[in-house]
Image (cartoon, rainbow, N blue to C red; front, side):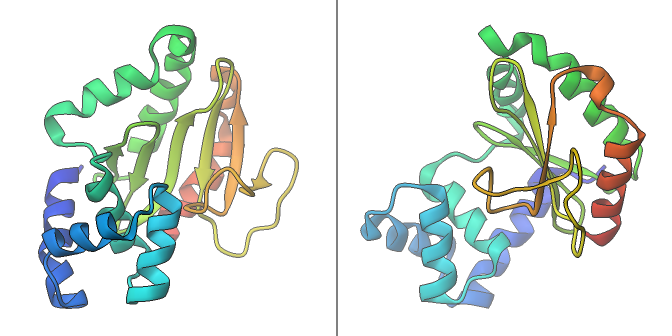
Length: 186
């Protein structure tokens, strides 16, 4: 598995080349904009400055200091599954264990409220959304919604679909098939 830190460092290094200013300048621009929400910052960078989604997301996280440094990745995950959500951790563990079997290039990038799952680009997110549910966001091009696989709607602009998990048994062949398809497209 490649390290989240190395992929992020490459992206940060490329920001100036691709968008004309170093990360520190883009953070100042974002801070001056007064925007607070991650999605607003991403939209601003994409529409006003021509950023692609991945780079805009990186700048948004850096400007809000909501990204994970490798030293605190475990702490971020522990915090996500603390207190009333502790009962959801076995669902997360089973899901991640299965996803990591897709290939050595699977990369986990914990954030404050979710874990980004990437290959060359993000193909899924895992988020404990309520006290009783883990939501799995999946990026699958050209896939219709059906039963469990619903359009992401207001859940997240970073994925096309969502599957709701309430139990470890919900991590099944069907879900893993959708995730594998997203992994192969990433």
